[in-house]
Image (cartoon, rainbow, N blue to C red; front, side):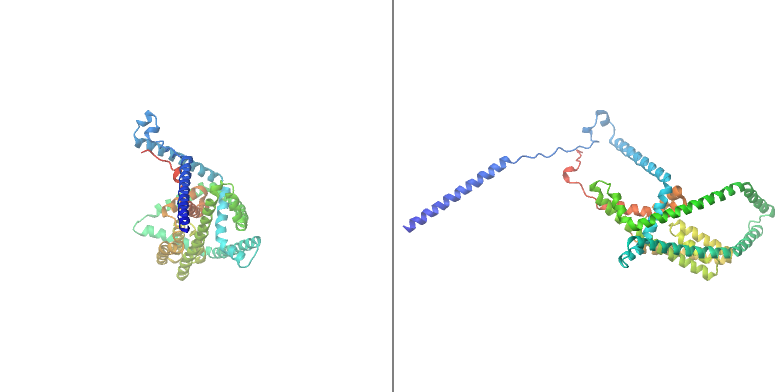
Length: 415
């Protein structure tokens, strides 16, 4: 009897397994029948493909169509750039103080961060102390430069007069063999030019006085903006990017932060390179015993903020002063020293200190400086290159961290 029950249990188990298998097959078949069939979207054809064009357009050669398409797009870009430059030229009275304040904020940012993190000062007090310290340093240096220039200018003027007489003697006795009448005619022409343009020179003096008043107004605006940039810079940036569409906020904010780090690094490296240049040329002038060595070193320091052109102009002025003050041998030594310092700056200091992150191609530097001079004069040349470095970093950051579109949204061409 027990054996019969075991056989019956096995048959029952086999029957239940067949029922379960049949049920699972029915459910799977029903699921397949109920699942909707999703057809892929039709491909989006390239508008330039012959199948999407009219018959007349299809008869135009493809090269001509592409050239026309690129041409009108380039014209639109050029027009947009022209409008942008026009706006910059019209608003330069506002944009120049903002640019200078941005550079000063980047220069003073390390000191501001030290006072905030280490000393635990509030933002307003830290920004005020940093600004006052910077003003005191600039005022002290300018006082030393002006004092030394005023004290030594009469002696330099006498030496310059002697230098002019030596040049006149060389022109008459040297290889050119110019006679006295020719030299007198040249000096008479220069004197007549000064007399004829005395009115314009007087007007220039009046305009210079007006420019001085505008300079002090500009200085106050720069200090005011710099204070708030140092105190509320991060909040101002968050507010400006808050008006952008939501998907663009985070990428733009991150790109702006990367550009700000580049600006801080650029200004810090430029100050260090300018200090090394001024120290080298100033020590050389001091050793040769050239008057105005300290004002000339200060001029080299300030001119170094305008890459390539600033170093060339300041070096030329140092050589001319050495020529007038100490003679041609000293001028030749200064010329060799200036060339050596510039080569050290271009091939060692800038690549080592600035690095690739803030490096800008020399062609871009020249174009930026030229554009800055046209738009805003010397100040435009000063702020042009750092702004180009900032834009370069921001654009590269956006390009490198952009999100690729999903495959379904890719435009498919039927070529």
